[in-house]
Image 1 (cartoon, helix red, strand yellow):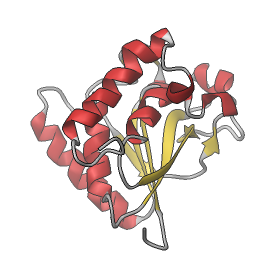
Image 2 (spheres, helix red, strand yellow):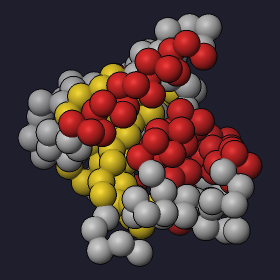
Image 3 (spheres, one colour):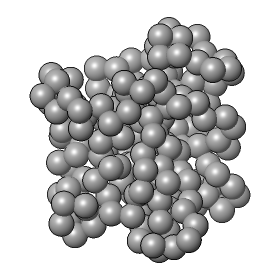
Image 4 (tube, one colour):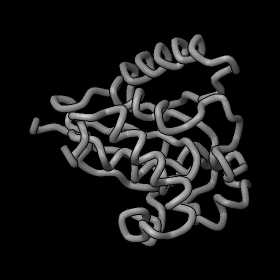
Length: 179
């Protein structure tokens, strides 16, 4: 492991699903569910769900770039959500569920911009993924952290998180923690 971990932040629907999928990848050391991209200070889950804070449900990763690169994280992100759905993913509707990449520095921004532009050529519909600098990340309440791991038989997790986890395991075979 390198001495310095890097940080990446993504939002693409419910953070329970995105968190569970990213936790599968070797080199991702921590995944924290939270809120970012809005204007309200110290938002709560209830406030974010109202759609009035401007925040999205996101996950913030600490990863080892010697094991997994930022572009591979982008590939995983685009594998586990539909970047053409505006302000929704599956049954979750609202700006808090929008597709968003929040960058940590110019290099991430350039890499993400190029990835999004290339992805736009691959889809029939326009990619609506937002791209902006991170700003402030607010950690979600404790009961949201590792939700899928703690609640694998929850109906929402069974129908929405588990398929994303399985897709990561299939797409990134050889690069997941269960290998």
